[in-house]
Length: 224
Image (cartoon, rainbow, N blue to C red; front, side, top):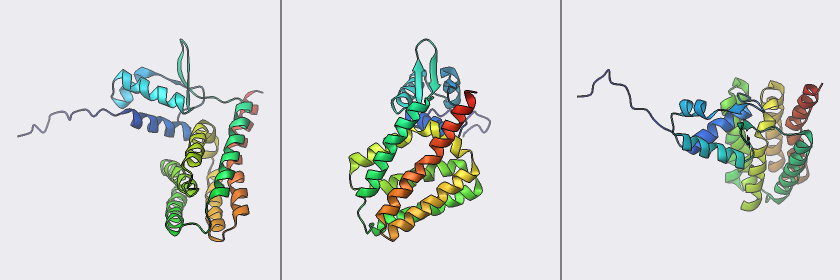
């Protein structure tokens, strides 16, 4: 018979869980650019071994969310204005190419998936459930660009979108920006339904601008 007063066994987590948790913390602004990621704190938070934390930090560095500085440790990635411009130039090239590659009329199953995801996204925006907003936004864009039929292109789009997480946190903290993004998602679905590729490409380009501009504006303000 089990002792009701016995302490429940601790549960350790893997590298993927740590990466996903820190990635979300960065996007939602719980971790700020230049903020140090202390190994001991992460070991305690995730109840895991040091080598697991180090593997997670290495992966976060690989995907561009963390930078490790010799003799100082790991920090949330900070982009210079020039790096932001270059990163978003690549995102615009890739996502425009993606929009141009989507076969129209869009496959009905993909269209229905987008509509269902967007309904969940809109509800999360309305409720200010930022955790859900984060997950549904990723799901929306990955589903959209999966329709290119080009796995290499969609993987590149996802990779560069992920690199921008430490830039997007500024827009994620602004309700007006979230609502604008939500409205643009609906407009993208409408463009797909009307088979208006030109409008879809324009929306994909416009969709990238608010997070970039708000980050650059914040950088200019901090230099004063």
